Amino acid sequence: MASFLLPVAAVTLVLFVLSPVSSVAAPILDTDGDLVKNGGSYYIIPRLIGVGGLALTKGNSSSPCPLFITQKLYSNGLPVLMSSPLKIGFLMTSMPIEFYFNREYATCNKELRWWVAEEDENNNSYVVVGADGKFKDTYAFKIEEAKTVVPDSPYPVTFVKADPKLASYV
Image 1 (cartoon, rainbow, N blue to C red):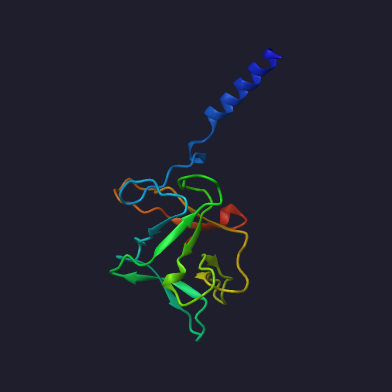
Image 2: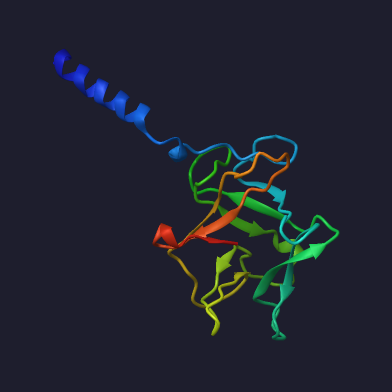
């Protein structure tokens, strides 16, 4: 029996050593360099458009829901609760993450979880909260590892469709 375990252990060790590094998730750090807690609230500041955090904006209807995620310039915006369905203490890159806004910041009384709405007539998808209707339930939001070595570089937030080759940036 012991002679059987040695080859199995050796093959397992070889497979672990030869695994690509990209498959290893890295811890997500906040702007202070601290680990991002699973279930913690944080400000997300988009880097592409300038200074300003995330906000909620009503659509064209008179209804308080749904709300669209927009950017509020020259402000930290609203805190976003980030949690993973995985039972881990801290969030890691490339793992599924759910994003929520706190209800106290909105007139909409529905769950303020981020959803990807169906494409419009121009094949554009939008991230909405507090909405009813068809959503892309075959996706997961993920925070990817920063691709630059610039200090304070952003982590891209993506949603991955059923086919991971079709990942889109949020």
